Image (cartoon, rainbow, N blue to C red; front, side):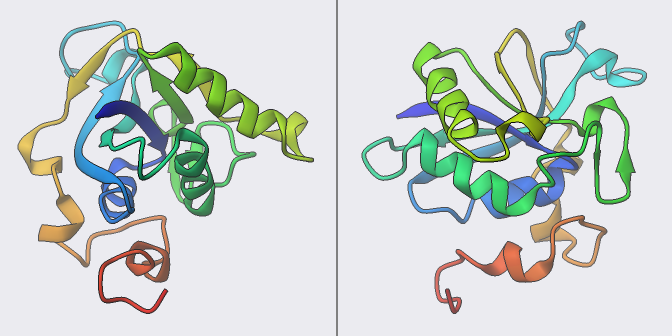
Length: 161
């Protein structure tokens, strides 16, 4: 099993989407690449993200990137939907170098690569989000989410794919 950290704006929707993907074994809402060990204040440079544990024999990093690009505006800097700020930037973070190589190759292979604002960086720090943010949209399905409900449902078992 391997772990990668996916940032796509507000983590509520990203977690709700990612946990339904084939090959994803578990998810955890958190913050990546900030400068502190706590989530006090304005999150000190963190990006909202989803810690994603996956089976690489079922889903590749390249495929996870394709999934991520279904739910983000890859050209937007520090904004997804109505959420604005550095913590809503898009990115892919990992402690495993080949994950970053694969993510970068996915972006570089696109015809719009020069316009893409998605960070691809080593994970330098991770902090788990509070319990109230874990699986938030499962518990509170009517809360705001920048991802259309049709996409949130797309890969759920039993849905029309």
